[in-house]
Image (cartoon, rainbow, N blue to C red; front, side, top):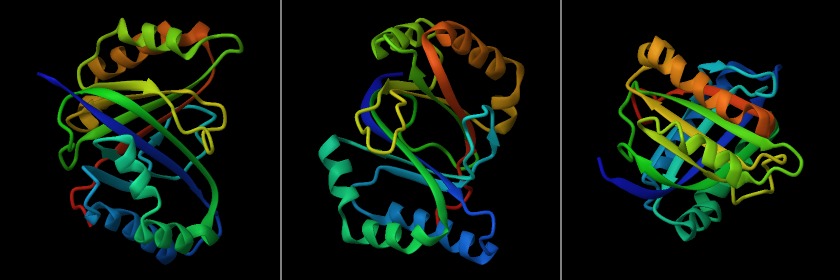
Length: 207
């Protein structure tokens, strides 16, 4: 399958424990409504399916894709996007975001019900992000996207983003999916100080 260059945009949220469920539902709905903006190639949002690392103290995600950095920048300052961000500030305790350029192996728009595993790495002091990328490249997993984060404001020192795509939760949690993930962890283990690992499911309905 040919590879397509796109921008990956991942935002992780931690909702305050005391938040009323109706407000959480409204937040997710508002996030999903951002998919209607013209520049968005793909957008999925919702609760995190599973957290697989101590550093991943988040409850919800938003993942979107764009054709270029200018498209992402335009999305970021779009009045509707800013309104959604402002609307949800009161219930958000913490937020984390990374962006990277990826030569995507797989479909740009993941199928409803498909699953994604994100691994975001913070390099050890003195370790170039390029070394981590090289180690990941050696695995050459299918439906793999990875790159160096170019948005540092909310990244908390994490510099490398990795996405593994699966047809669904069953494949992601199956033997092949786990072996693939373990292989990547082993490759980068000595190069990273910390990782955030979360698994998400693309909603069956967009809005």
